[in-house]
Length: 277
Image 1 (cartoon, rainbow, N blue to C red):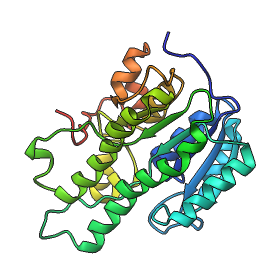
Image 2: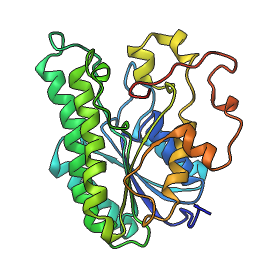
Image 3: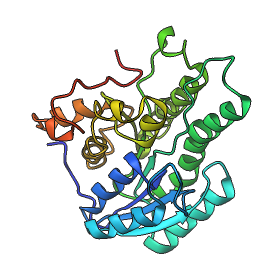
């Protein structure tokens, strides 16, 4: 059976954990009694985006976990290092890193400002690499360490680049971290995997960038990603690495057959996500 361990007492370090998929993964881990380190910029409520790291922390505690909210901008090494140090000081180590923080601009070459380009590459590629680099020394001390990047399977098909090459490059950069680090640390027992949704997920980014409430009704809830992440993170790290997982496939393999409860509005035709044929 793939489930070899649970997350009670494990410490999970999640970037972008104040809302959406990051928050859902945090709450799912907390249901096992995990310690959850929530790393995000959102300390004060945003006028257009729900949730802060403190509201997420309340949900983690309510679910049965221990929460450590840390205000940090993942673009800055000193802030990430401080968050890692605080996590280790508070909980004694780090067992799992979830690189969830992401920036998106679905714009073509001429419409993409260099400010947006830099933001996507700083948050998506650089922060994923940096958070991994700073957490790995602690992860290697644990008995079933995992890194999970929220990024897509790699594909060199032009259609995935044509309309938003800067964004695609940045997300594929996260996936290249999986490709490289899984091989680099394979003999050290560290699992490095990616997870991506089969359908669009009801998040603030989808609501604000892809058509508002009409689009949200054709999405699945973030909980499907959280349940899939949990399945991956509780597998044996030594035999589960270098994979580009898709949420529905992971759950089907785990025995799930009914996905209707994940739908925002059951019965709607679901929107497929990017990067999957």
